[in-house]
Length: 167
Ligand code: NI
Picture (cartoon, rainbow, N blue to C red):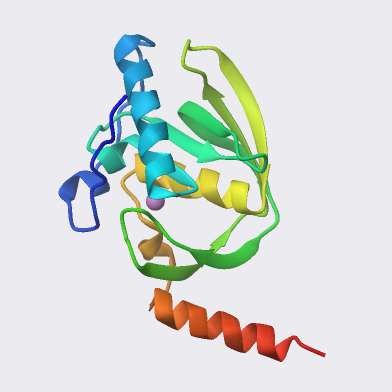
């Protein structure tokens, strides 16, 4: 296993469309293991192969039980509701934006051996499914938000909001 370098906004690879995986071979397994190691090292909630320069439809998403889901050729097949929330990205370090996403999403994907399965996500997990699958089509969350906040600005905003909600 090895840590891979995470590309940041401005790198042209991040705006390209990734190709489907057709070979569920050793190379794919190495990529999956490296993505997981890189994600843990970066302390993120999800990572897509194009973020490490590999234009293949492969993503890792951390689910509600802290498991790392391996999703190959993932597609959102149904979604429900809406949520507004702050979103960040390992490829846009230090910036956050308010992004509207579905509250629930069901994803159909393949596992590392090519078997199809479906998985449901709610809240942050549904947000992460949509965010990571966007990467596979060359899209960043910054396209879905009106303004970007720095970490400091976000912290201030959160403090104000928690102050307001106190009785
Ligand atoms: Ni991202």
